[in-house]
Structures are given as C-alpha cells and as structure tokens.
Length: 178
Image (tube, rainbow, N blue to C red; front, side, top):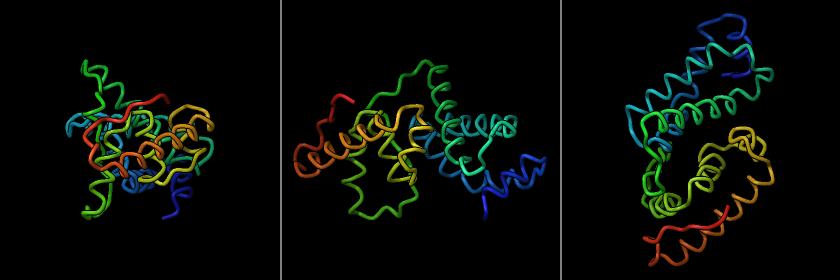
C-alpha cells in the first residue's frame, strides 16, 4: 500500500483511505502504547484516542511521508496522558514492549536487556530497531534533538553490550545518564 497516497486521499475526506492507513499502523501503535502503559485496556484506550485525534487533525499534517512518525508522536502523548490521569508513574521495571518478532529463543536475552534500560534509552532503542525509524524520525517523534537521539542510542547500545557480555549480572537494572 502506498501510505502517502492514502494519506492524501484521507485528507480530502476519503474515510476508507483513513481506515486503510490506520489498519497498516495500528499494531505498531498499540505496541508502542503497551510499551508505555503495560496494560491492555489502557493501551486500547490510548490507541482509540490517538486514532480519533489523528482523524480530527489529519488536515494539519503537511508532509504525508511523515504520517507514521506523526502517529507515533500522537500515541506516545496519549499514552503518557493516560498514565498521568491514572496517577501511575511508569517504573523502569514496568516498561515493556510488544514487537512483531516471532519470539525465537535467541531474542529473549536481548529483550530482557532492553527491558532493563531506563525509559529514555529504551524508547530510542525500540523506535530505532523494532520500529525501524531513522534518527530524524525518532527526533520528531520524541520531540528531542537529533544529537540527543544519537547520544541516547550510543549509551543504550553501550549498556546493552555490557549487559549481554556480563550475562550473570543481567538482573541488575542498568542506570546511567542520558
């Protein structure tokens, strides 16, 4: 599917085109919401709110090629609003993610290591390696500079390498400046 073309159609009132592009990204959006909220109902609520917000403000999107990045930003904001509204802070130990990976055994250690990173580093790793966003897209999605994205990626990769090479110490959360 040509998402950019579907976005243009949706911006001109084609509801079916909007449904098509949402179907294309909804699993990734739900996974991102779940990685922040770690609750199925809250994640579904965030997804619903994000879709509604996107539908209402689709006309404000100026570059159709940035649709996916724009949607990630909306879902992250909605997820954080729900977390705040429910008076729950997202603890490092609660942060998780759902990814469309087949669950091979060799990925378990990596997933556990990513779970131990602090939220800012974890988000950039998930967006970069599990959702294939580039540095510029991550920067726009998280509302931070490209250099900060690069710094967080560097520190997260360094922490992951250290964790994976010291597999006996994996139970200890990795904390550091970001």
